[in-house]
Length: 429
Image (cartoon, rainbow, N blue to C red):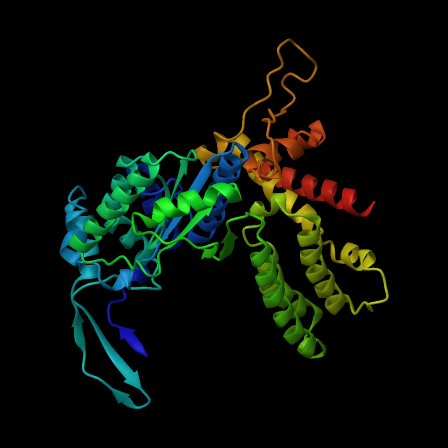
């Protein structure tokens, strides 16, 4: 057990950190002043949307998942404080006392080591940890922007991706230059890029991937067909088949354990377990499941069905719909649509990130029609299933199918309630 003897992090509430992150967003490190959980969902779906549209238009996408070695442990305190030169003396001293004069000791059983000073690093697991690391990494964002490459970054999770046309070596050279500059900056700031664990995936037509892969190898970047990105197993074909298998294996493992103790728990506690261990997996980043084939949706639905049978003690020979209806659960496909439509409503009402609102366009007919001002969205043209899976296509497509009375709900809570009722009715009636 390692104990930290400076407890100033207790002074930082979630609210104060969210405010600091909003300031950080304005400085440009990240486009979202939100929690890590929400950042993962939105950044994953945003990147997935871009890649789907690129593939649909015949272009290639290259995703690089940077891996930093022990990033939080090697942050230099002097460099960290230099980044805050514009802060007032009171605030600067507050952070200075948080970073400096920290000590640690190791305790095993009844034996405790002597205390030693911590000369670098930011505490992992603390509320302020990710914020401090975000500020430390501010110059890195500018390096990536200068090379005109897309990126998402939060704490030590940094992913960069670019679009290129087949046969165009310019973007590959720019990517190589960008990674070299990133590596140089990291070295000068006591951080290390783990090149062996940095993963690269090429998305696009299969026959064109080999050429891009060969070009990436010329700048010492090895590609892989699949990689885990923020908890989602992404593959070059964008079918998420491996990710669905991972969810299925994990969910059934936990469901089996829950079923063993179901007779020892109350119904309320049993439902909490199911939501914590099963739905946390089914709903995780499910906004990218819009293009899943029926086979994959069916696999996820079978997990939900099994969970419903455990809670309601429904036999395998009995139909599952009554059990799902009694639990007021939306089926998997409707849960996906619910997540997407909630995000659309938030964006249209100024409650969502701007870069997501840029993906949606209000429908404007060429001449005055009854549909004018009815809250409809323009549905872009796409050519392939990849384009149909993109948020910028799928979201307006299903939004326009909603009743106007639902689209025009006055508040988020009212829209949420009406939307669930609408989807529930469509699923079971």
